[in-house]
Length: 380
Ligand SMILES: CC(=O)SCCNC(=O)CCNC(=O)[C@H](O)C(C)(C)COP(=O)(O)OP(=O)(O)OC[C@H]1O[C@@H](n2cnc3c(N)ncnc32)[C@H](O)[C@@H]1OP(=O)(O)O
Ligand SMILES: O=C(O)CCC(=O)C(=O)O
Image (tube, rainbow, N blue to C red):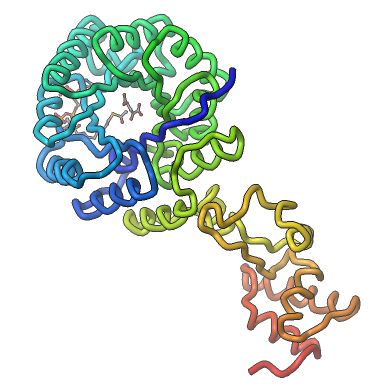
């Protein structure tokens, strides 16, 4: 199946992202993140849960009055007072979530699926009567009986939902199963399908893409993959994977993804690991001899795309795994020229020091080693 030409990002950093244990944005932080997301071209964002009241409702109200270009969505249970709270925040578009798996319906509606449908109908009607656009989410869609999931989604559509969200709430699917389930949903619905995937098995981004391959047109993301437990599909991964793998546009300024990632990481006081896809510090750092040699000749040897596309600059670092081509390249900037024998001696010294320090070396450390090996000029 051919994926559609444009995919919509509905970023939920401010809702599911903030549900990550230990994270709590202030009003100013919520406003700053919403503004940043809007500036780089995010089309839609889930800004929070109005039913939480007080500060959360005030933050949502404030964001709703910023005049952002993005569509704003408030998250709700199928509870009338939740919808009223969303209305009070000045939102024009809301999301209503209902459980669709047996296990979730048992816990939240004592197994009474008819009660769930009734509350869904009442809340959609109430919201629409107040002029709101309503998206509906099937919580735990991945574990739901497939026939029941299709019935629930069709019920949402018949009652006026403009979109249905397929949720892999506990992150248990693989991309193949996701594809099959979403394909069936897309086949019976006239309204668009949105993907909401969790990363419990490290497959959130892959499963979101599988949903797109199956015909979904919108993806919930979070910056740095923040979110419940192991988090959600990361905005930066989804946007770049859509572009690199499928050539799909999201109209998002990818050059600012790194800046956004750093901003959110600082706000939540939670740095991303160096190996984190797209935004980790090592994503365009080359230390290994064979890699550096290749990249020096042609960057695409070991880079999936131009680092500038996401705001990075390529870095070469000298360390335990480096080879003589990289050493020569770095040292020639200091007018130090290596031959076969002294480069091997210097490489040995680099490996020893790097192993001892358990990190790559600074340029000063490299120059000191070179000097100790009798190479070059005295270090200032
Ligand atoms: C998969 C997800 O991410 S779902 C979103 C999860 N996010 C959050 O929970 C964060 C914000 N939540 C909150 O601030 C609070 O949970 C509130 C304000 C929504 C509700 O708070 P409380 O009234 O104290 O209830 P509490 O959180 O303890 O329990 C949840 C209640 O919501 C009900 N509920 C849960 N999901 C739904 C739903 N989709 N539709 C209707 N009711 C629901 C539960 O059955 C339970 O109801 P009960 O009080 O009648 O037993
Ligand atoms: O929007 C919904 O229906 C639930 C979304 C969610 O956070 C989840 O399923 O993990």
